[in-house]
Amino acid sequence: MIIKKHVSIIIGFLFFSSLLLACGGSVDLSDSVSENERSQSAGLYGTVTDNAGAAIESATVILIPADDINTARLDIADFSPDATDDEPLEDLVNDTTKSYQTTTTDVNGDYSFASVTEDSYFIYVKPADTDTSHLPGGSLCRISRQLTNTGLNFDIEISTNPSAAATYVGSSTCLTCHSDKTTIYKTGHFNSLHVPASDSDMQDVSAFDDFNDALDKFNGTTTVYFYDYDSTRGFDKYKTAETSSGTVSFRIRLLKTGDTYQMEFTNVKNASDPNNGIVYDVDLAYGGAVYKQRYLTRLAVSHAVLPLQYQQEGSESNSPRTRKVWRDYHGSYWYNETTQLFTTPANSKSFDNNCAGCHFTGYSLGGDSTNGYAATAVSDTDGTYDFDADGDLDEINTGCEVCHGPGSEHVASGGATVALGLLTPERESIVCGQCHSRPKGALGTDVPDNADGDMMRPGNSRSYFLENHTNGTQYDTSSSDLYTDVDQSSKSHHQQYTDFIRSSLYKNNEQLVTCSNCHNMHGTDNFRSLTATTSDDALCTDCHPDKTTVTEHTEDKLGTSTDMGAVCIDCHMNKIAKTGAGRQGNGSYWENDVTSHLFSVARKTTSIVAGQTVSDSLMSIPYTNSCTSACHDSDLSDD
Image (cartoon, rainbow, N blue to C red; front, top):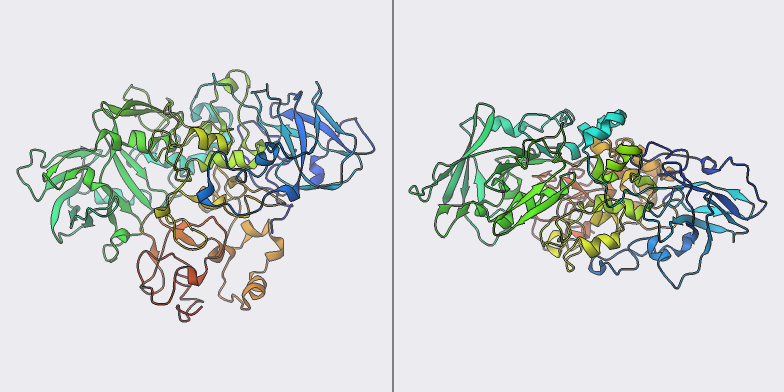
C-alpha cells in the first residue's frame, strides 16, 4: 500500500525556482495550510497561484473522490488515445457522467467551497478553457486527503506553460542562473552522446567507471569478425568474435589516428570490393552509462550507427551470442550478403530519424528518404558536438528544456516554464514515458515525433501524445518485446514507463507516484540518481514504513525469512529486461540488466515450467538469478 506521508509535491516544498524538477520528500499535511487572513467555519477555501506567483482567475477547483480512481491494471492491448482508464485524474475530470464538487477562482485567485462532503479527495485544478498559459493538476492533486467540513484552508500552486512561440535556448543558459543544478552533468541523460574520450563543459562521466572502457580496444590490433550470417534474426544477424570463426563475411579493425577513433572495414568474402579497407571515423560514442556503447559516423547528410555494440559486462567466453563483449548492430546495413559488397545504410535507417529525437534538446527533423534525413538540436556554446555542421556546437543530449519546455520567455522576462511537480502525475510521467516506452512515431520510426518531425513539448497529456506522436496503430511495445508471463513483463530496454503505468504505483487511491518520486532528474550520488538508497531499503520504506523489516515481511508473505540480507528490490524489481550483456545467474541461467518497473514479484512458474529447456531467453526471476546461490538453491522445477 502507498502511504500518504511521502509527498512528491506540496506547497512550501515546491515553491522553488521555476526550473526545478519534482523530487520526493516527506512533508506534513499542515505545510499546505495557507496563512492568509480569510477564514470560514465550514467547507474548504484558499488561493490558486502559479509558479511565478500570479493569481489564477477562472480556474476550476475539483474535488475528486479517491475511491473513484480506477485501480484496475492497464492492459497494453487497450492502449489508445481514447482509453478512459490510463490517466487516473484526467480521465475522471473528462468523464461527462461524473458530477463532482467544484468551485471557481475569482480575480484574486481565491476559491471557496461553502461546505464539503467529508471524504478522501484528490484536489485538482483545471485552468479556464481560454487559459493556455497554465497547465492542469496543481500541488495538491497527487495525495488523497481526508477532508472535513471544518473550514480547511489550502492554497494551491499550478504550473505555467510556455507559449507556442517560445524557443529553445540551451542548458548552459539555464544553468547560468540555476548553478545548483549542475549535478545534472553527471547523469546519463547529459552523457548519452559523447565525443570519444572528451567531456564537453556540460558532461562528467566520473560516475560511470567503465564509460570509456571500449576506447582501449581502439589500439590498432583489436579486430572483430562478423560471421555465420543468419537472415532470420533481428538486428544481430551476424555472430561476432575477436578471433576468426565460422564463415566470416567481413571484419572490423579498431584503431586510433591522432585523436580520432576509427573503424577499418575489410571484406573477407570479396577482396575485390572497391570499398575494401574503407575507414570510418567514430565521431560520437552513443551510450556508455548503461551497460553498452555504440558508435556514430557522419555520412553525406545523416549520421549512421556503426555496426558494433560494445557491452561492458560481456565476455568473449560467454556462449550466448548476445552476451559477448561485442554484438552485431545492424551489420546487414553495411554489408550486402547477396552482392558480397560493402554498402551504407539506407537513408531511412539513419540515426537522425530513428534515434536522435529521444536524445536531443530542441529536436527537429528535416529531409526525406530520397535525399536523406537531417536532425537538428538547439545550438549551445557548451554543447557536445556540431551535429549539423553549421559551425556551432549543439545540445545533442537530454537537457533542461526537454522537461521544462523551451526557455526563451523565461530567460527574457522570468516568464513561463513547466514545473513538472505541479502537473497531474500522468502529465509528468509521459514526459519521461515518451522515450521510456516503445511506440511507433507518427513518421513510422522508433522516435515518437509528430508528423512535422518534432518531439512532444512537456505539459501535454498522455492522450495528446498517443494521438499526435504515434502512428495510430502501435501505441507502445509489440509482443516481441514482452515476455509471455501473466504480467507481460518487458523484455527490452527503454520500456520502464511501459511497465510503470501498469503498476499500482501509477493508479491507486492514496498517492499517485511519478518517476521523480524515486529518481532525482538533476542527479544524486546514488545509483541511477535515486532519491534515496536501496541497499538499506530507504527508498522503499519511506513510502512503506510498515515494511521496514524485510524478514518479517517475507515471513508474512512466504512463510520464510530472508537471513541472507535480501532487500526490497531483489524481489520486487528484478532485472528482467536487457540492454547490454547481462550477467551470469545460477548455473546455466542468466539474469539481465534492466530493472522491471512493474514492482510485482516474478513468480517461479512464469519462467520455469516442467519440460522447459534452460536457455538465454528465459525471463530472469529470483529463482534463477544471482540471488539463487545465496538463498534459492532448491530444485528450480519445484512450484
